Image: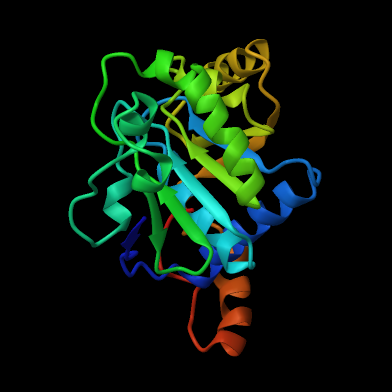
Length: 237
């Protein structure tokens, strides 16, 4: 097992609270919701960021968490870590080139473990829908409290639906103002037709600058107690 270090990326208070709320909403969805797929409709909607921060938030709540990078086509998950080359990843394991312990990474965040995607493969859908991946999820279910799986955008490829139907639930990440309502509906219908349990959606990249209530009153209120003014930072979540 390899040890890796997370890059320092301190989230503002409001964003931290948003991820805690998302964690709570998932917990209240039922005790049997432990394996969760994260997807989006199109690239660049922030699904990998949501998957990473959600997994980290569960770990900070004293859960033993495994984050699986199942975006075997165009992964960006390594950007969150500052160590060097990862020797083995998910594709290495799925094709039989290594054991699970060889690709499992332990982060410096207590309780937070990771499996990276590994090298590109010409048949990601077949690997994710195969018996080996299904067995991996079953074994991980016995070891970890929560399993978060980052998958490719469903509007581009079918991988997310293949993974989602093997999970307890699926969360759809939607970038505000970047995608049509009808397209999101079509993606949601794809998930349901594939047999995925859709837990809900995360509205991502929402500008808070124009929101007077949250941008001024809410920010100043919490600024009194947390030592920082959060009302005009112009971030997105």
